[in-house]
Structures are given as structure tokens and as C-alpha cells.
Amino acid sequence: MTTLMNMEIKELDEDDLAHKAASHADAFAELYRAHVTKVYRYFMAHIGNVKDAEDLTSQTFTAALEGIRSFRGDGSFAAWIMGIASRKRLMFFRGNRFEVPLEAAEHYPSPSLPTDKAAMRRIRLESIARALRQLSPERAEALVLVYFGGLTHIEASRVMKKSEASLKMLVSRGLQDLRERTSLGMEVEE
Image (tube, rainbow, N blue to C red; front, side, top):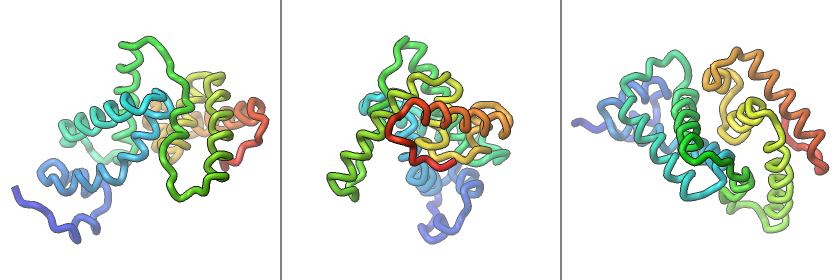
């Protein structure tokens, strides 16, 4: 198997990387590096357990590697990988039958934050996590995909199999619900 030079890989867009990843490990490694944090945060927001989030992240990328030939490029690679993550999450909850608090998502390290800012961020995230558990599952999923998973509205709408307008409405109403449920005021931009 030929390997691509790092310079070549850095110059490829995600669609080209995904198509090259079927036969070049370096291309898949680049996609992994670009998306692993988003996938991990997505699982932390839903699962709330570092070990399970790490396991599901690993399972997601293993499934992506095994199925990379099925990536057609109809949507972004980010939406494709988050779709896999969403299915892994659903299978996880089918087997476990419980929801774990969303608070664990705030524990994703941010070493650059000073202690006081990190503490304030944790308090805000705890408040948001409590409020997210009170939202409808669809609104919570839309918010988690966009704000924890880092997807655009179009990408999140593809993952949830909704129109972009429906997804935007879920996000808008979800944010409104969060604002009403949190006393700290949201600093989330729509």
C-alpha cells in the first residue's frame, strides 16, 4: 500500500480524503484527527461516562473505517461520521436502558482556561446539562449535534433525517427552552 505524503494529505478537502481513505491509512488518520474531538464530545454529552464515550468513539471510527467505501460525498464527512455516532449511541442505550447525566461533557479538558474561568464554565455547563435533560429528546439531540458535535445546521439535519428548516426550529426552540430553564443566562449564539 502506498502512503500519501503529509503535504499531499493536508491539501486535500474532506471529500477527497474520504475517498482516498479507502486505500490510504494516512488519509483516514487525517479524518480521524479532524473529527475525534467532536465525536467524543457528542458521546460525553449523551453518555456522561469517559470510558463509555471513549469506547463508543473508538467503535464509531472503526465502523467508519470498515464502511468508508460507502461514503458517497452526498453530504459532509462530518455529518456521515456523526450519523454513525448517532446509531452507536442508540444501540448503546438499547442495551443499557438508562440515560446518564450530560454533565460529563463539561469535563472535556480545556487546559488553556484559567481556574476561575474553568469553574464558571463548569457551573454554566452543569446548569445547561440539567436543562437539556428536561427538553424533548429531539430538541436535545439537535442542540448536542450542533453545539457539542460542532455540526452545521445542514449537517445536523442530515444526521437527524430532518429538513434544515425543521432542524433550525428544533435548535431555536431548544435554545429558548434552555434560556427559560437556566438562571445563568445563555451565552450560546444561534
